[in-house]
Image (cartoon, rainbow, N blue to C red; front, top):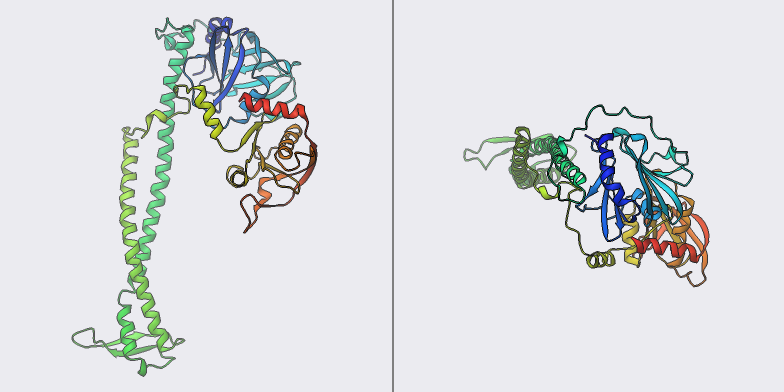
Length: 481
């Protein structure tokens, strides 16, 4: 259950005075619906969690850190580009409802961050100085550029707030109510995650069991078909012993079966279109096929039956409620973990592949350092709808811009990426030149050529110059992250 308007008011009464006047020094997005603001106040650093999950929408100070994805999502990148370093001038609850507004002063000027903690419609929006929407967590692109209007006023809770779920005795914490809310939701979400993992695993097991059963049945069918050829080596040997008496065009031949002690007559079918030698070879070939089937299919069937038994056992445990996730500490991306030191963070960043930048629109830009990285970036990391760039007609780095499927490239992001493609090419000395760009799906490997060599189709061209102001902004955002 999400926080009620009354509960949000109590949380705001507790933490807003301490956070107002602070600076947003870090921004994280550990999960799809969760954003964490690291706020620096004189002598202290606080982490404010804003969850827009439909079931657990809330806002409160947290004490535990969160495990973040290796690459920040696009919305997080936008927040970092435009709100990181902003001063919090005011925090207020709009109309006493489940909406909290942060009045900010960023490097670009005044703006607002609005948290709509309204259950299924929860959202986090970035507004400009005039109150128009610049970006939102739920990617409602049709609202971008429109004047922000709060959702219709929700019916307020009647009576006292239910404090029973936040009754933990954590009075020694700097923010007791936030600490109680954090503990409550961590337990609730951990339980929910376990249930989600269990249901997901059950679905996977059902599909795996069905698929494996079909595979085992197919192996049995193939083995039964091959079983017909079990005696075909015998037929081949008998034909071989009687090649001189058989003529092409015969439909069968009757021979003495010297493999049987009683030496009976045996009639062997023949393909009249084949020579006697061809019929003999055909029987030997089919017998080899039967031997191969026996050699390969029986072990597969045994292993398949064993695996099927293991899957059914796990499925039974899920149905009986005794199943436990195999690695409980890593069940959720939102489980707290000890914070690593800054030195280690910097070391990991230096060792990470590709140069990484953030465009003025908050989109991720990747730049290869050498031929091997160019190849890995283009044909490993990049997706088909990502934008790919390269300086025209000269050696240089491959540049990739992360784009959501169907999304168009913003003009400023295109110019940022083209600037980087020019900067990390042999055209850097001239300070200007043409850069080609296309979707990654139109870039193919050049066969027989060195790593990084590509063939590009459906490309467009952009003439750019190295602008110091743009380069400084790109490098500042990269260093800031």
